[in-house]
Length: 591
Image 1 (cartoon, rainbow, N blue to C red):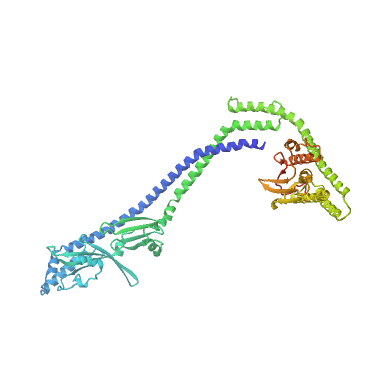
Image 2: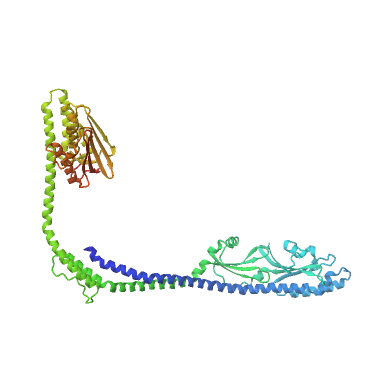
């Protein structure tokens, strides 16, 4: 009844979950797509804003570098400087002094913007006078880059940019240097190398905009494969340096980057923006999304509840009426129809179920009248059968035992006989218990055969081949003894000495098989079929085996029992099949 009472609510929950899944799953997929799209859009917008700021600063830096190249071009194309560099006669000191004054005025004017520290022309002519702005080539600090300019090995690029830094008075002295060659007027001979030294720190002052905490701006020198930290905000230089060593690897896990290339020299300005900063910038967006998700879930759940209620209302009402009808089967005219007047499937189910309940109620009244009586008769019948069958076993063996005592002599053999009888009855009676262990039943059979060997003065063999793992399994008392008795009395006793009885026991497929085999006279086919029903025997043999078979089926069920195989003149084999039971039932106790 509890099942019927909860059926409506459980079914309603299932319908609600089905409706919820129909709405929620596609909406969730759509929401995930929209959130991912919006997240990517916002991320791109934020990074684009920083890229715009960085591009503006890079434009100012590029303008300074471009202006420096134009100044170098102006110097290299000056005809007065070209003539002075080619002159070999340096006796006119006044002319040289006038030229140096003119060059000084021009060079100082070129340095007036404040970003150029120094302009120097290094001449290949070693006889010219050296001044502040024009010096011999031997005064130029030559490295690999400047050597390329001097030797003219890179004709495709007329201008060479290099970065140099040094530490002076505890501060970094960094500079960008522009090198270019001055050629003769006919263009076939290099005359000098122009060096323009720009203050790197003043140039980088143009990179001036707010950057987020944990960010850094780095200047990458293309030709030298170097990186210079331009600005950083609360970030350790070692952290940035570690990122710069792996520009295409680990930094992607912690930073977004935006970069701008300077057209003049190909150097790069790159900004590192922490991913955590973007997450903080989008906190409001995530809060809004969370609120939308919660609201959507509540709305869909309420919709599912309302829809499931209307879909299952009639079914729930029908189930409730069915439950009340089952609770009181004796009540007449049980109304199982739903209250709805619609002639739908639920009303048809109610009509058919009401008819079924009326028939069940009639059968229930008939069965109830006989139920107690049948149980009582069956219990009484089984008890009488067990008592009758047990009574048919014990008196028969007691008769044989008394016959042995009657004809026994008063000697040591009598003492042995009595000892065997005592051991036998100690196991056989078993304090009135009907269940013993297999090893005890086997011992009892052994003592029985000792008595029979003494009584009949026969020399026969008895072999026990019992698997050790079934010794402690349980069986009904006196199942083996009648079978062994039949093997002795009707099998080997009439053949004189040399008889053999073999007792085997094994476990197989949840059963225990006990076999008693003899090499006696055998049983004719015409008698074999009637032995288990005791129809063909007026003596104890048939009755004993039939009792054993009936006891097994009454106690264990029809799938267990007793079977006989026999060949006349060769012997007989009787197989007992019982279940493998290792624990005593509560009513039996241990032996």
